[in-house]
Image 1: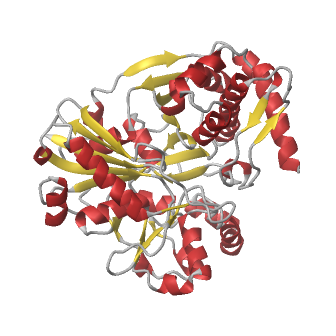
Image 2 (image 1 turned 90 degrees about the horizontal axis):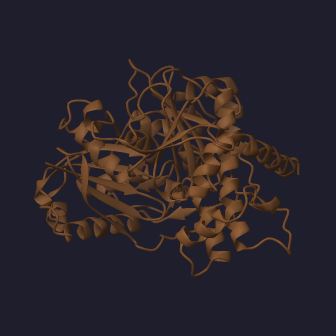
Length: 493
């Protein structure tokens, strides 16, 4: 029995076909092969086309099918992971009315700040566990205020993964986890937030049917089954944001367990059984994939927008024509600390852990007689690691004390320079796994379809590849405080 996982990323759509018996990926594909564009009409804005996501998803599924490694008719369930916090708005004909306002878009920050003032800081923090910030609800409020004619055409709003599920099945659903990541959910009442809906003037008819996250969110239509060589009627049985899904992929489901990822954005995600929140909303709390009113599991999320995107920028500027592997090798030859070169990796929208400040990226301490492209590449990776330390310290203030962090050996964790910097800057061991968001989505589909008897059963084959422990924590701690000094000077300005 096979499971299909679809990961709707910012850079591309990846799909994996997983054998439910072995829990192993037997085929995978992604589209496009080059990174998908982010549309930025104004500074701080970020959009993508939902129809492009759908085209990419179909191309990726067809490419996986073309591998000949499996019979597409043997796929029994579909799971979807997706970039979080994006706003997709469709009309009654299920057509996207505009580009999606995606996760790193900053246009709604002030709208969210005004909402927090009006609703009340204590109400927002204790009931929503967050400031409305620039999350999905505030993005919808921006559309309502600035595109009123379009707003009146909206039948349903959704997140990026919901859109792909809708295209496959014709059904539009949501979950508690999805609503919480949009800051629509009242955790005290365990219902849609009356405060948010009333303040923004939203009709409840805009919200799709609320379903359990692990459940049937629609069945593949005859037309889609024919187009993609699938069986008609197979369920989409799991949908989750990329960071809760990454945690699921690493079997991070219980209180105290912590996951990390370092793709376009960087995330540390810890699970708590308390309705925890940061008083300044610098880290954010959402319902985890296994949240229920009776067994509360809250994911506490630190997000750094400027992570892999900084690594890519540095490669394009200073290492054009060279592979990431070659640049990582050059960076490894540079001493720890990059001989006085420091990078603040904050150039991809407002950073929540910096109280939604839009600081931009900075390079500090350039010595024109000493520093090379290898120094810049290493300093960028160290700067990202220091940003993780800064955010993890905030999580520690709020009771999250990880003894080990689990991460997939992918993206920036493929770099030994970055991995060592992360482990030593945070002074926390990292377990590396061979895991993938689309594989996690496939296993989630198996849980939602009842193919696995429990969440635990879906991960019996998950084994760590490597444990990386701190060896130079003291040296990195001293460097971190120099880096933090530069950051504080920037924030003062």
